[in-house]
Amino acid sequence: MDVEVSQVAIFLRQIRSRSYEHRQAMNILSDARLAGQMTAILRQELDSMVRVIYLLTQTVERRTLLIDTSVAGKKWPKITDKEMVDIAQELQGWTQSVYKFSCAFIHLSGLHDYKDRDPLALLSQEDRSAILHHCRYYHGGPMQEDASFDNLIPFFPRIFEKIASNLYCYLRALERGEELDIHEV
Image 1 (cartoon, rainbow, N blue to C red):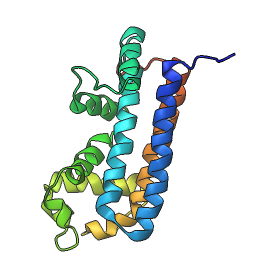
Image 2: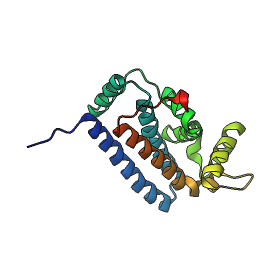
Image 3: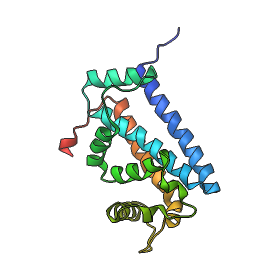
Image 4: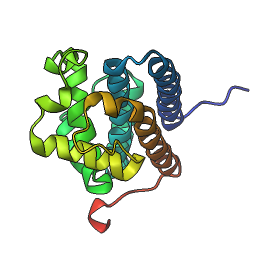
């Protein structure tokens, strides 16, 4: 007798499979020191996390619709990345700075010239400070006052693990059917 797999189970499987592949890619890319691609992997893992957080803040009906839409391979209706990132930012405090920085590596930008120009030097002082502050607070560095992108690269695997561990906590909450009220945090 075949047991029908729920849409939620399929959705969870999709995200876990994606995250597992991201972890493998991060290890390979880290060994090869392919920083632009490592940053793209961070962005993709962050995308999964902010989507799951968003789902946890939705009514059961809306959540079901969005999960069904995702499992069917369709784009979520009328939701911007900014909306999802803003919600995640309220919970995490670091989501926006990682998202903003890593998006620049998803889209062709001056940051791709990182072998010849320091991407951190191309950011506003506020954005640069936020990235370095979060990396120092959560991952222990880089500690140099004038830290460069090159100093930041060794921390990308740790940043990935932070995102992935948060993602897995939120996936378990989704699996249990929990709801998240960001205004109570």
